[in-house]
Image 1 (spheres, one colour):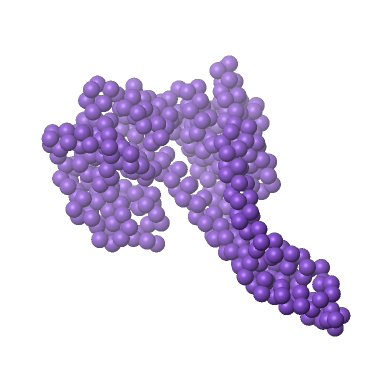
Image 2: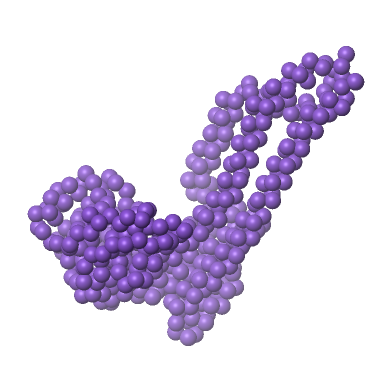
Length: 420
């Protein structure tokens, strides 16, 4: 595993640095947090960036200067991992008893990201002007979606903001791990497919054309496989730019269509109905639903608001419509498991575990456990599907190479009949 260097501070604001091995930056953040410290900088490499470990300060002139430069620096993107680290650090600082303004000063001074520093400086200014944190977050909907802001608002109302921030950090870590696992599972198949496409393109555009003149010089009629191969190669060589434009038009046209409501809904319907991949997509969506609902309800968000927020976070319009339909049932007095069961989309496990949670009074906990169970099933399914890709690509490449070899050898075997 790669090694990451980090700069971190403890609950008293004392800086420290070191290195740790992890799968990625998200995994490194989790491991560093387990040491009882919270990271402010994580970078690839063995030597920790000592210069970043500054002693926390509330120098008014520095904050004023940072505030003046905030507008020009906010053009720089704030990443998911930076938002995750902000959430975890805020939870720890508030849990240690620091006022929220002081917590922002610590994080502003520690971060090396201009974009994050500008965002935090602007938010600190809003808080000093009398706004609650939840309202300051709404200035940045891309970094802090509705789920995040509503959780923070519920924490402010209940007086448990540090606990809510910790729940949010746990939720974001789980989502980050899930995203990394999916990307890791897809990387290998995509590499194989890309290599196969490049190999086929190379054969058709560079190898086959060199044989074309030889076969044509033989005269007579060429065998059908040879004629197909030479025709395909000639078409690509003559119309390569049209092929590229056509592929680009299909790609961009498809992307544009999927951005429309009709296109997105059609694609989501196909995703849920395709064999093998449909059940996998449903489990991914269900796990996201359970984790989001469990996090929101555990943070004190009312169930109707939680269902509304969760519906917008599923990433699938069909599932969103079903949850909103279930929300209507809850509004009319049905229990959550009854309303989810009545829409007929989600796996039986979701309904049964939700019922257990309602009966035992531990609904948020049971929802989060259900999400973990579904994530485990998704991992197993992804590993099985990934293991099938390699032999399929090998079979495809073997079949194509066999077709090319057959097309080349047939004219040679029939040379006596072809030569004039």
